[in-house]
Amino acid sequence: MGIQQTEQPRRVHALHLVDADLDHLERAIREPDNRMLNAQYWERRVLSVRHQFELTREQRARVEAILERLAQRNGEPAL
Image (cartoon, rainbow, N blue to C red; front, side, top):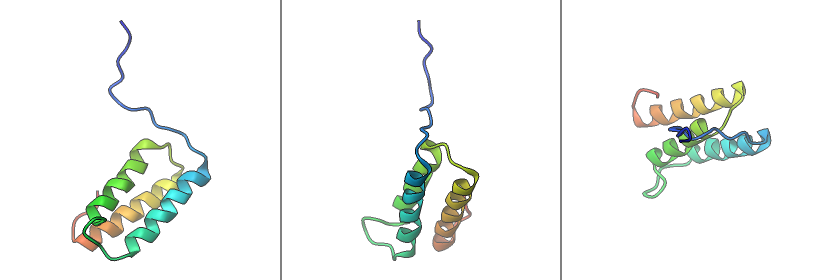
């Protein structure tokens, strides 16, 4: 029997691809909420980046800053 993995492996992407995704997320959360792309949607997107990719220290700091801004916008404690 093979070993069954319970967790998805993290992917290593070129730094510029993850940075481009983080640039997009940072721009997007500066926009007002709309029905389809509300704060919860953006939070899921940011968490997806945090969990799916092997991030540099700077990228992790950017992710945490984005999550903090989303939490402040919603009046919630940061994750």
